[in-house]
Length: 241
Image (cartoon, rainbow, N blue to C red; front, side, top):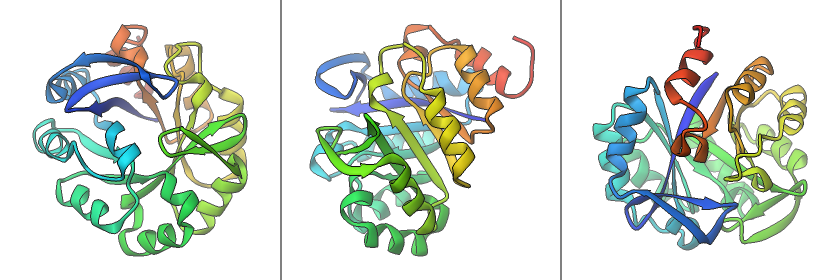
């Protein structure tokens, strides 16, 4: 299983939100590249980035930071947050990222998702943010009428290969992840599923890996020390911790 330590960007800083609430923001480091290099030194191969400002505006205010991290961290970077046009997709891919993650656009513009997947293949992933079984959009500020499972099945039918699924209620609270949700998704879909939200212990990582999940995103738990990233990486590679 692949681990994706996360950097959420706001005004060029590495921050974390509590359950997606922009009014409950913690600044962890004003130098995201330094954070990324620490992740690399702990053995990480991938990095999950989210432009929190872009999630609201659909623009790329942190593009320079993303470009710097992609070029200098030595990590394979994926980026999400307000990616709703091909122009933004091109900007990020030209900046050297591995893949871009479509969120709100996957709900509001399903035809656009199919077109981008046809054009860019597995460089396009889709993020599905779930609250009470339904998909949330626009930086988690609105709830759509689409259920998680119906939405993921539609994405699979469009040719999407990778889904990043976040249970908002679990995000940033260090209370454990929604194992039942990921178990159901992995058993009913043939997608590469990345678990996100509440992954807060090595036990969570072990349980997700046993399900055969493609990956897991590590957020607050890495920043607070609840998860030792080096130990987590070793665990996924079958080494003793």
